[in-house]
Length: 152
Image 1 (tube, rainbow, N blue to C red):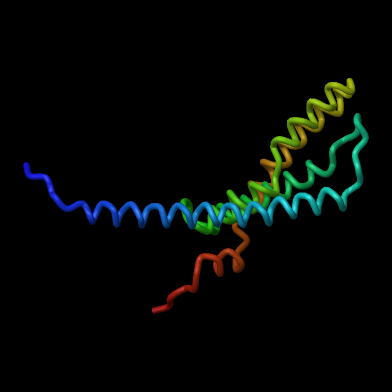
Image 2 (image 1 turned 60 degrees about the vertical axis):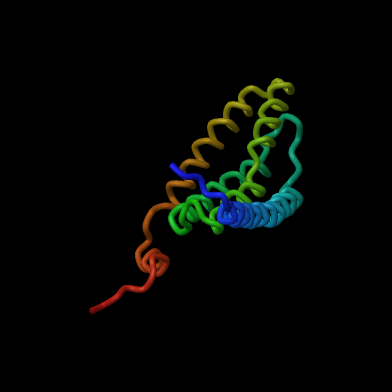
């Protein structure tokens, strides 16, 4: 077996891979900035939460995010640059598992066990329900999303 003495094709392949990776990282970063800004805006528009009150801000954001990722999962191919931008970037920055976990802990610390359990179960059920609802075909709108029908 002979070994090629010229590895230019390997270097050129590495450059292409890195360019693709950098483009994906940029798409995720820009999407994340948009999503995180949307999360901040939503949090400032909804009512503040008492220490032992139901965290409506995070609940609404996460359920809306689940619905939107359900839509994205039926319309954007995975893996793709579009998926990296929309799902990982925008929706990853918009939704917030970390705030959900901290708020569960805050409710436990405030001895608001009933609210904590309701928040936990409601978030999981509503989030999954929103995801499933977004994936239900809706006739003409979904037909358009799949592309034009060829009659022939």
